[in-house]
Image 1 (cartoon, helix red, strand yellow):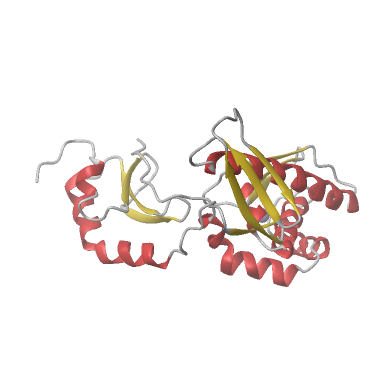
Image 2 (spheres, protein in one colour; image 1 turned 90 degrees about the vertical axis):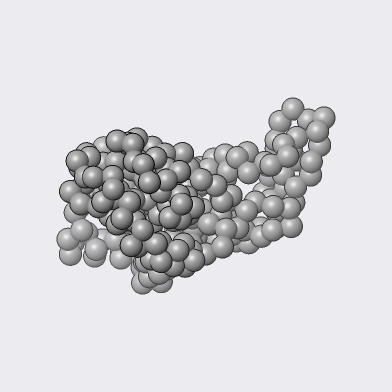
Length: 247
Ligand SMILES: [Zn+2]
């Protein structure tokens, strides 16, 4: 097989259709990383590594790649008739398609996520709506908790992070993963308590954990749920697709 100096995604995808490739300046060694959000395994190649070695490494780990992909929970697309948890309550998805409309409207009422849309696939519109619901509710929750310890949350930004649930700077600006909206109430409460506790303690020391537990409604249930099931939040709304090679 011929190898160009840059890795070609299509060559690596002969090993597995779930394999993507990234050249990294910082990486010191070849590694494979499961990307739960995009449902693929990324081969990280240090900039100076040989592409042939990288290919051999991925080839030797072919079985591992497939087994990792097989452990991922099945995707739960936003489809008519489907059910999704939103802020700890189950909602049935009801989609009305109306091609004469110009926009998509989403509402949450009486256990139904009602979507009226002109789109063949309104996934992105539903995602946008759920992000706005997440942003609004997470801000209220974070401010309420911060108020208990006389701290201030200025802003909550919801993001589509693939490996983190949240972060919080000493300036009171918090980022939360929008997919937390699909988690049980105790788990959301724990993650927000965790980030609020970082307003006081910028580390994960004993005093941080004590405050985090005090702020949480049910620290043990929430933190264990995130540890054991957090990765399952990535399956909502995703359609299986290949991401383009990032360089
Ligand atoms: Zn932390």
